[in-house]
Length: 209
Image 1 (cartoon, rainbow, N blue to C red):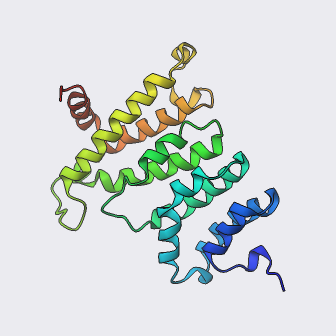
Image 2: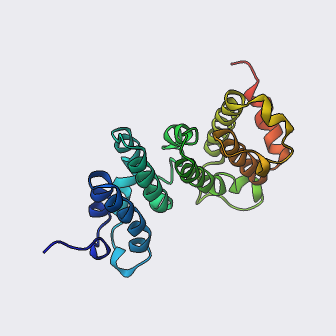
């Protein structure tokens, strides 16, 4: 007897449907990922989640249909916060920086959520400098990741900028576009890092190597 999508109790099975079934079944399977995550059926599936997230970039590269890629990226973003690489929070940044330039707004939004999720842990040492951070990422490593993110975001802002954007005073008023997505992420980074730290990153970014 064939299971209904709502009866499937493993993330691996749901992602197989996302990647292989028709448009409607793929969409339903993507929606079911969130429901499964927050149900008792998802107990003890952290290894499964880890494998899905770890291989997300490679898997996504093989997807041809835009609607299927949207379903896949959206579903990955639901599980992303459970990825096991706490010591490498930027391990998917190359992929996510690619996705925030995608023409599909839902894909960009999902990638944005995943990047912004990492900003909190990466900036703890900045926001709470007097606390003990021995149980968290080494501040020097976090600084290095933040510097690279700062450089990449600035490069994208320069590449994606159009003269028509000059008339918009606020990020929220910008037309929907990759430039707006990158601007929002940069704004989140400014909020978490603070202007003093952002100025430090700017100075480091222009220093000759």
